[in-house]
Image 1: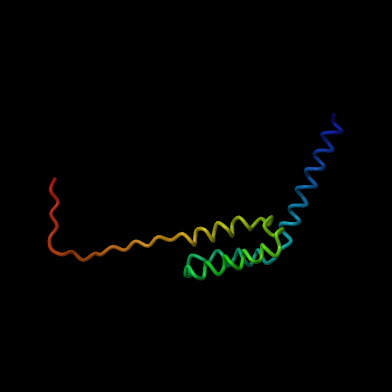
Image 2: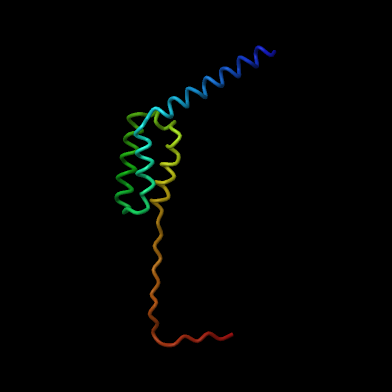
Length: 100
């Protein structure tokens, strides 16, 4: 029984190490992450172009989706894509009365 548990532990460690090696093997992902951190300061069109660039890269190298920074890059893209602009006209046409 102990040998069986030991064997499972070794297998899980090997799988975990393999994912770590695969995930860290794409230095372009570090550049994508740095670029994605600046997305809130650019236009929506630039965000879409960056998203396309990342999607093209992950299509060419599907294993790159296992990289530890990939979820953070996707989160940055989503947060930069969702923008709401609220403008308020502060000029008043006359007096405002509030009665209690």
